Amino acid sequence: MDSYLIQVNGHGDHVPMLDVHLKTNGNNISLGKVKVRKPRWAVRASEMSKKTFNPVRAIVDSMKVEPNPKKAMISLSLGDPTVFGNLPTNDEVTRAVKEVLDSGRYNGYAPSVGYQSCREAVAAYYNCPEAPLEAQDVILTSGCSQAIELALAVLANPGQNILVPRPGFSLYKTLALSMGIEVKLYNLLPEKAWEIDLKHLESLVDEKTACLIVNNPSNPCGSVFSKSHLQKILAVASRQCVPILADEIYGDMVFADCKYEPIATLSTNVPILSCGGLAKRWLVPGWRMGWILIHDRRDIFGNEIRDGLLRLSQRILGPCTIVQGALERILHRTPPEFYHNTLSMLKANADLCYAALSAIPGLQPVSPAGAMYLMVGIEMEHFPEFENDVEFTERLISEQSVFCLPATCFEYPNFFRVVITVPEEMILEACSRIQEFCEMHYQGAEGAQDLECDK
Image (cartoon, rainbow, N blue to C red; front, side, top):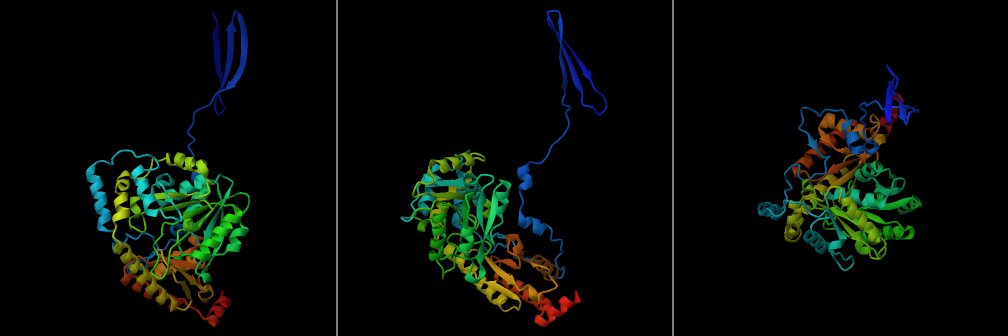
């Protein structure tokens, strides 16, 4: 009979060793010493989690500042239209969800890309002769942010790069860096109503460029690109053979004197993944319903991108089924006056804010044409006691209890962003306080020079 002898050697801090001997047919064979793993706790955060970085949170969380206790806080920082209760969604929208909930028919799992009938409803809503859509061209997602995440994940590999607007929505960079994708920032031009610097954009393209992100209408700028400018963007993408990820969550949220053009309606050959959702136009960001529209007229994406999106969508098994069940009714029965009233209110606030801030020495607001935001330039040379826009906005909080996001959050220093969804009286009060703050700290050319000499 074969026999085994195992002797354990080692003590103290030394790794235990197994001295293994095998006795077979009367012969003693040594198999030598084998290291034994000593179990110990070694739980570490993943590399992906360590690469995940939200610049807005990093900057805002580091702003250790208390508001003025003598003044009520006015927050113009959060792009959530529901915060103050002055922009409720339409009754038809809430009624649709209530009826679906009461029906009990949407409590189970849906296909990961969404119910077929719901995909058909989205396709029908956005279908047009210039950019035809069918149900198979629609992927339903958990909000527009997941739509952007899936689109990035299917188009880009670690080590590749994507082209991102500056100033631009911080989520693009947050998602890309967590995936090991490099971000290249192309400039928007405030003096041209935030149009893209097309020469700069094209100069960034290289063999590792996976896609171009175009955000229109824009967060944080509130800008809306003209048809001719969109055609020039498409020309760059076509020359360089770079697909477009179109963030169009604010699509159709444009003021009356402007026209919104979905970029896919102007493309004859550039493949586009257009990301949208209910959050902004229907004023329900917490409902987490988004979508990707696949525009691929020349079959450049082919089955590979579609299959990739299907596989990626299976990671979380699709968006909320209750909202999916209500989607057709929300899209097709929301009355036109609801959209009109929302935009009228935003336009009125934008005009009020722009006029008030334009009259303040040292500030240079850029008039918006849509979305929910307005960007304001700070002539920092006239505010020499502040190092940058972060310090400027910190002091605005501590002295006036008005919170605007410093545009460093959007990779664009010496500006700040104002959210225009707050009630009119709050906009007026905020602008009045900003004026008081600027008048307190503004230095003309001579005063600023004297202050610099004193430092």
